[in-house]
Amino acid sequence: MIAILGISHKSAPVSVREAFAFDDQEKTTFIKQIKQSLSLEGIVILSTCNRTEIYLHTAIANKGEVFNRIADALLEHKHAANQDRGIFYFLTGASAVEHLFKVSSGLESMVIGEDQIIGQVKEAFRHSQKTKSADSILSRLFTKAIEAGKRVRTETRIKRGAASVSSAAAELCHKIFPDLQTITVLIVGAGQTADLVLQGIMKKIQPEIIIANRTLERAEKLAKKYGGRAIALSAVESVIAHCDLVIAATSSKERLITREIAESSMAGRQFKKQVYIDLSVPANISKQVDEIEKVRYYGMDELQTIVIKNMERRKSAIQQSMIVIGEVMEEFMQWMDIQNLTPTIMSIKENMKNFQQTELENFKKVNKIKEHALIDQYSEHISEKYARIFIRRLKEVTENGKNPEYLRVINNLFEPTGNDK
Image 1 (cartoon, rainbow, N blue to C red):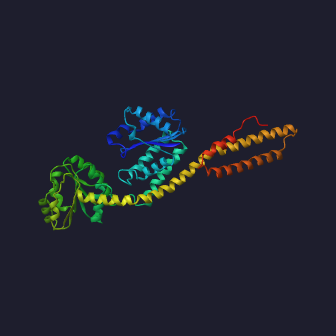
Image 2 (image 1 turned 180 degrees about the vertical axis):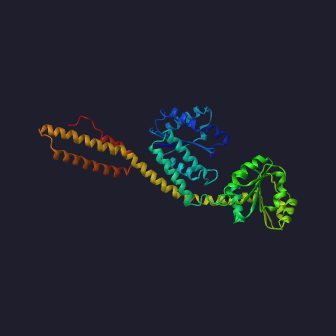
């Protein structure tokens, strides 16, 4: 049975999720602890800031038993015996498969269609391969999940449009200045937001970049990363007239760029178009700069509106994404059905072969026939022919393994007793 025990941003707050996070070393330790008690064929642990999910392939068929055992083991391992089990979700079979495919495709993420999760799924799978904890079933499952994630992102509009304020800012820059390479960009701030905006801006082209920060060392570090130059925050007024695009992304509570600074800048650049984008909370750029001719201002409200519209577009792609997931899922489930048949098919072949050899030896003995190649070949031909007939009927009766309840009966039919003569 394939099963998932999980906790995510949909079932628990971050303070609880943090308590159930795993690093690679802890994954290895936990797997060793539970492998025998859960009769595990394979296990993969996916742990991110938004989710921890334990994927199992177990020989235990009872769902309640599997849930209790894995939940008990996890709570004990994390020293959280008093934690309410309601924070966990538990899925098996096709529901578990569909869930992983949705996770890998970004449909279960806080930001729908985000790319980071598919890399995290790959990393979880790589760790399981490295530690030899993923069997053939889970290996196939995760390979198909990664395939589903890639197809959803390339065949649908699930990742179209910025889904964060920083990416919305970069998207806006490209829209306002189609030829960004010909302009000068001033970034006020050198933190994570500034870094993310620069990543978005620099994907295709490389404009002239100036980075200003209160701590010059941080500005120099970010400038080196993107091939720009660093200046002190106090030097902003001396360069702003040369900048076509000014982006503020700091934690300062002060207005770093006032209307007066912007007006002076426009005079110095002969009233050539200038754009201000403010990603700071509270705002670092006065909204009044928008009142100046040839100046355009975009603040957090405008950027959030862009993000909301894009998220609605992404949501509209969910239905199409589920069609893609359904196609990949059907391929996996068909493969799984065949795996259900494999042990029975092997049993039929082996038992028919043993039966043929035993009966042939008895026939030769009773009839005092010495070794004869034609008799050997014919008896082997008969046994193989009937084995093929049984296997074909097995596939028909079980619908290629979709009805595993018939397998137990068929296995009993082909179980040798050792007493037949």
